[in-house]
Image 1 (cartoon, helix red, strand yellow):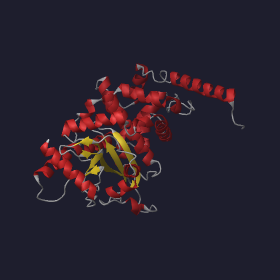
Image 2 (cartoon, one colour):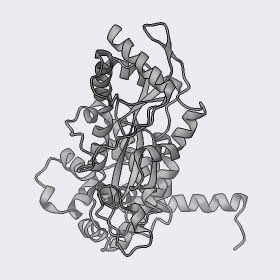
Image 3 (tube, helix red, strand yellow):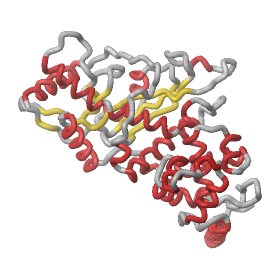
Image 4 (cartoon, one colour):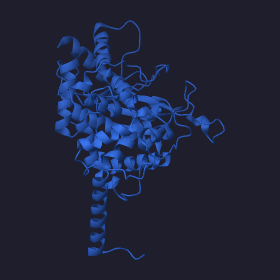
Length: 391
């Protein structure tokens, strides 16, 4: 068929959009309307075990987010999710609305259930669950990328202020940490050993830079679990940008001795000590200044494991219960789950931040230790330590 041009292309696009909205309306309400008719109908399709829970709590128990957050996500992905609007139907032949489609995808991602389990719960074929989930992932990549980005200068000033207010660390811009996304792989699969990590699990690593309010500011994923934290860092765009001065290049802050400290992030002992990445002192018999630095460093860095615990607890799809996951698609799914995490944080505010959570996001994984230390970074950390005890 010849390529569509001009008015013909616009007429086709308008017709598709009109058909999408008509199909959504027929399936329980206009896209984004969030009317009670859709939720009532969807609840009837779900198991009756949640019927005794009040409506708002029932919604959050299923989707792990408030209704207004769900509605916002629907508004983001509406156009992409409603292409070929009549293609997805319930087992009874009724066309899935926008809300139905987003609901199916979110349940698949946050329940960790199999395609068959999710399909049975909501009344659709398991192949429909698979197709809708992947369409949702593509739609989020297209429409929600602005929810996971490096902060601009004004946003970074607020982040630095939070770190200094909470733990007294001047000019701190974030915390870097990694977590393992475990996978079920067959030992007969080609190159499976590269995915075998130090704890004998098949896994993919997620490295994230996290703000004090538990947002992801930068992520890298797709690397096999056999790689160390330090190696993943050196392979990341974050490392390359910081090394050439394209990131963490904002205003410096004066210390008590008259010197200045540039922007930096903090990380655990698994990372190298760099001028822009400060790690804790690891030797014995520390001075009072170094003890104080380690104390504040540990308190500030705790936001990262808490965030990763919450992240993995919400998106149980990432718990390794998938059989032979597509290792090309999994990084994209992880990325979308990180964007969803940020959206929930952004709309839920302090309620999520103040939740009581453990720090054990990598159960049974030992702390990695990196002995690499840049000479300039040693001086930067020492000056900061002295500043903390004198200020």
